[in-house]
Length: 383
Image (cartoon, rainbow, N blue to C red; front, top):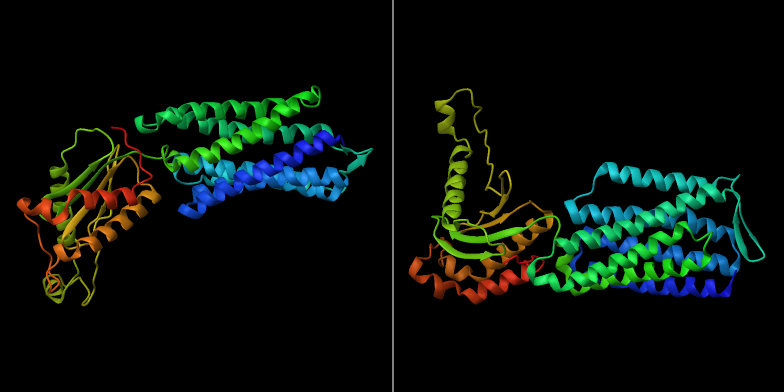
């Protein structure tokens, strides 16, 4: 094989491995399935380039089979998972099934005994070259187009505070096109392979560095968070934080949720022996406790809530009930209660309702802002 091509392959593998290590660092900080799929996608792509370079260096058909049968399609599958998580906060079973079907088909095809991979004078040859080459090109091009698509829709969804990143995302999409287009004409115009090399390295680094610089990029697509509301059980507003400028009465929302929660506790309370005497159809000792309300779905929004605490109701108005958002709200609520435990409970453990006149000195805007920024740092402001 041409020594220049080998150098390109090893350099490309080194760069993409470096990008995958950056993405691993992102995952270790946040440990989300979205970032895990992003890391594995780039790691498998790095392994593909590296194993291809090693197989060409040692002229090993076995390593070539391992490289071609596994890594390109696995990388494609995990990029599809990443895109699905970024857009929907979940993975479509149909897309996963299709991705692994393609993986199983190519894996079986490459390892089928009648299909041979040979090295002649340093050049790799496939007995099933024509069809396999096109299938491989489709996989690699699809991979690049997935990243291009993510760059473009993310750039178009940026809030005012992140608009400065838009040029970098568009540059990343250009690199993605460079990576995808030449693979179809590389067998005719071999000089264009360098564009595919540059494009692949470019999208690897731009995507990972962009997310590293601003982790909120991967959370722009699934949902918008409108407002955080903290109130007493009676509906008195303690605190609110806005991320979108919408016409919503926080006091009315707090009062409504408090009333609904009180009603649900009354209607779905535990059954007692007194109830059994009134209604003989109920079995003695039968109990049912539905607990506090955690989520209320509206037509175009969702109200997530932490209403298990006696002194306060903590509400989050969002466009979607994201798993990450639920975890953030749960962690925020626990931290808030820990921070203000002495102000919200008596020494005997009874809940205290803070009056309007005492709200400022009891809580303090800066204290709550600090906790909010810690647990909702991934949320972008559209104000």
